[in-house]
Length: 397
Image (tube, rainbow, N blue to C red; front, side, top):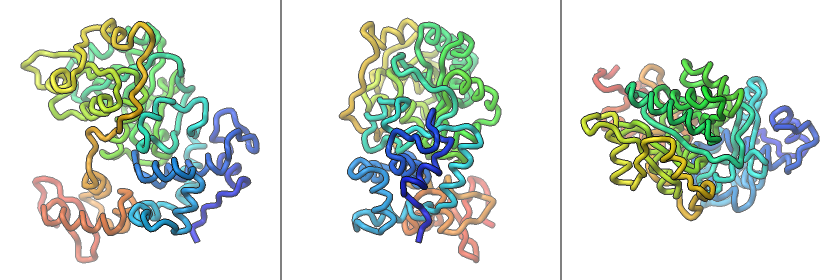
């Protein structure tokens, strides 16, 4: 039997020290429901719509019981993804790591829960983990995003835009990466403004490591958020999943500098699908670093942004625009192959079961994808049945 206990008493004990302003035995929401959402955050990968639909239908605790009891044949494939992670020790480790770093668990129904995440519908996070003070719910929020490999022009524009928007009272949202993201956070902080960072791994794992000090400064006056539990490593899939949260939390999204295939365009795609106001900063037509911005202007009907005044105009004189809750957040989503290669390593051989657990895929699905990867020369299986990824230009072991 899987050791996950959902009684009220055990849920209260598990949540001790993880809820903002809540003492043990004083949880205003249903403790079992809150604890179940913490468990679900360990089980699922970002944006798992099957989990979202099930939880919306019966509640987090009841949904977890359905999975543990093996009920519902239609859930067999999803259950195969979730079950390898459904271990009490893994959940306890995530909660203990959150307590050690001072993270707080935030769930729907909490005052701190970002209401605009409702626009994500089935792709909304089941729970969030936060370090820091939080985010003013009544302030206009602008997501400023761009490439890691930024030019001096891009970083300068990013810092200036963020500073001016923060001075005007807007919350600046970004992803804490090198390049444009970091310049935006620093620009907002330079004016004493509020800035928010979304991470692709646990909030106890500063990423990139070079921004550990910056993330501490962000948490001191704003917030560092993640939907993955403490201890979770950032992966390519989780970066892409994180982008939908950046877009959903914002009233407007501005791409400052991005190449033709920059990950920032994934965020722009989510913004367009969610009905958020979308803009881009133009660059020289000869600059590859601005080609993605020009795509936003041409293909996604983005607003041409040349100053903070343009962004404030996007927000509107009558306050920030509401999101379009009838749209799904499927733009720019990647496939299961990305998750598979996130779980593989070119150095450490991993069993199919280990790959399935790390990727959040069902074991059978992971095995099939590994077979295709082997045919394509992107993965190799050893004599012991364990798998490694094959990097381009490498030779098979």
